[in-house]
Image 1 (cartoon, one colour):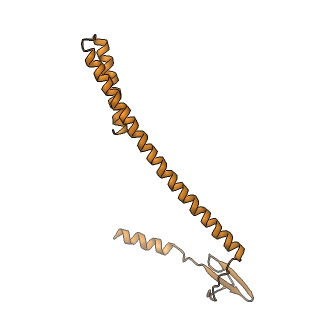
Image 2 (image 1 turned 135 degrees about the vertical axis):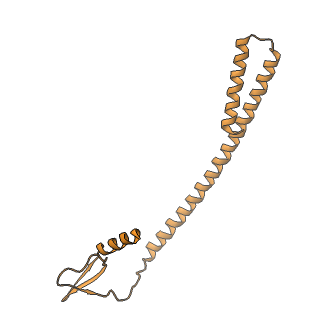
Image 3 (image 1 turned 180 degrees about the vertical axis):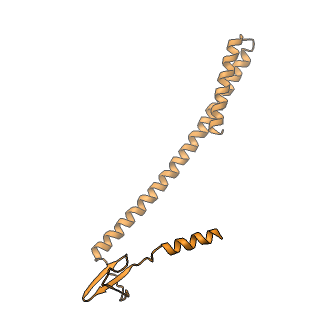
Length: 138
């Protein structure tokens, strides 16, 4: 109920919007506000006609649109190439990381009896490689 009262109050306070033609004698005024004092509102009438551009302007517009279309096709093709390159780069990085992890594992198994600081270094390096794989979603 309160909602409707607020809407009613707002409707009463708002003035009616006017966009149109005002006439006073031989004078005509086009305005988007109510007609001033002494002016009468008149109906907007008449025919609407479209003036076609000159052939040179029309040809220039068509040429511009064709150029924009060609630029858009080129841009889309470049995006596809860049996305394919990024995917290939990501695959190459994943392959490289997996290879590094295999090398690290084989080196670690060859030096199994290594001292504790070296074992920690192997673990840290392996963890870093695994984290990089996770970031790349390998």
